[in-house]
Length: 367
Image (cartoon, rainbow, N blue to C red; front, side, top):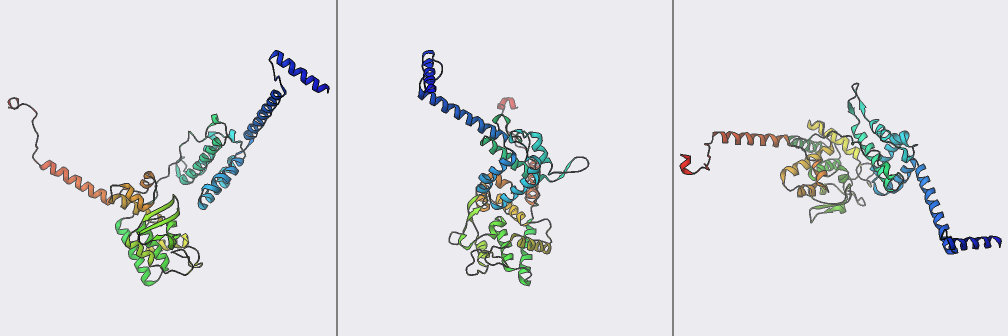
């Protein structure tokens, strides 16, 4: 009772002086605001105490598990476990500096005695992208102070030199002849030979070829409707010759994949099985430094050289952006030499022709 009287006296005093809550409702509202402020301060303190391991745990649940394909998820998990966690996993998110993350990125590179990078750029680039994306999310989730920024903000992603070598037309022809020979002497499995042929004819990613299902083929439209590619659903026009290759593969009842596995027919043909066979075919053809993915680069380059509208080539390769498409387009040396010959002939012809210079002076002055 006494406490109630004291509280009532405080409210009356506040009403007279204008300082503090003057009613029980105002007092309750003030208490609610104080509790909310304390909760926000405690949450902010908890966020400041969280480590990079905590960031990875949330990143794995909300980004990797939801947005990334299985192969990408495995790669990110490997990079986190072997590269990032041992170096900075224990650090508080807010305490991570540019020096910390740059050291993690550089650790993947191999240097010679003079300090020049001789390898590991691709791995370093993968580490860079993962850390950059993790801290971008940390800022968005308010796990890192806005003023701290992304610790990789001022660092440039390691550049990876293009490793693909563009095969010549003669080398592609040699590969096709080697496939024909392997088919005649039955040194390779029929579905493996057909899968390599399909890669040459379609220019698709090898993973798209190997997981192709019979229901994805639209024969009347001469198209492939691929439901789950690297860039999502993709509609690909194909040639009559490509369709003939796909239809040449013997189907097995109850198996949905066009190119079925050898030991487990219900599964799709394995990448390593086709890759090893392609190495043997390439050796037989006398073609060096050529991979299954190189074929896709050759296909993209030939489409770019054949049409002026890049979107036509992109429709065949399945690229969604022009920049990604152009990454696959190489300069064709044979075409470049032919163009150089044309320019030389043009210059020579101009040099032999009589100059035709029109005078801009009046007739009387021109005399």
